[in-house]
Image (cartoon, rainbow, N blue to C red; front, side, top):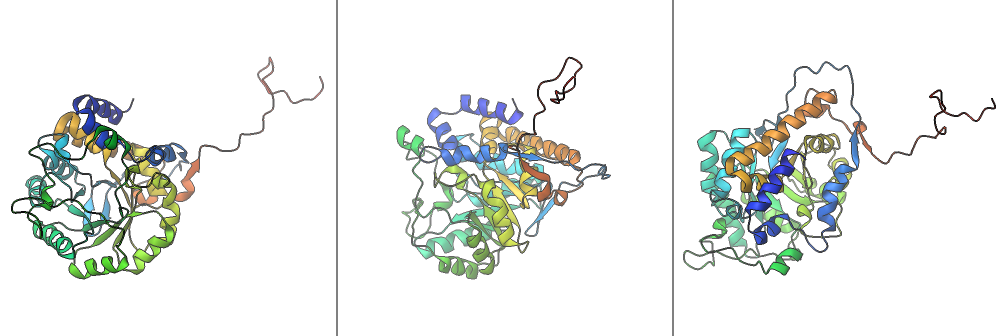
Length: 376
């Protein structure tokens, strides 16, 4: 059992079962959720040899920020369900690791407090803000301004939620509202909200590329488009001026018929053709997964559920452990693959485990050699 699996088990024991299901569950029959991990399990790496990689640098540049490893913290909601410190603890852990935290619009700690927690650890800590288009343009504008004021260095715009996915476990558990004392703090005191209250998170299928253009005009921050699986959408996104594309099936929580995210990565990376960075999340559970994704065209990967398992199991220390484990595993895999830096991992090093079997020569003889069929 890996260390991340151990943290998962500890988290499951610590969490209210309803809240565990909220974090762990997917939509529908959870086929997309399962395929995220299965798709990685089907991949193997062909190592290169004798390449003089005794000194390695695992860092990557991301939209003007620097991450000390090619792993960022994906946006996930409601961290205070996992631990009282919630997103503050996650922010401190990401800052200690020297990587990017993407804090969610649906965080249970306001974005200004998240950035303050991160920069109390590291003055140049990078915090990006995840936002979804809201039907009221004034609400979207207010969210962008709130992120800018907090010192966020990029916006991650989630675009795979025209409607909420049908979350089977949440429906079964009747989980619709946060416990008393918790709220999506970034949605407090927005246009249309009751005094001191929060707005509901609203999705709508009406959004088009026009809404992205409007958001681009609102801000000078880099814009990342998250939830891209089709290569034509990736190409359009780059043509529309986005600064990065994020391959994701929303952790298997939106369209259950969607493939595992890493299955879509090669075609998206080919469509982007190096014009902007490509990120990926969904199913990343090991340093080998990180390496495979980078070889297939990702600049960096995001982790969501493993961070929540670490947070629920041991607060900030648990999140730090998740990131430390992934760093150590990735550096080990990079070394074994003959790489000195993430960019040394290339698509020709990735194969599928279902190789055609080699022709069999029959069972061994008493002398240990294969039967050849030749007469004795």
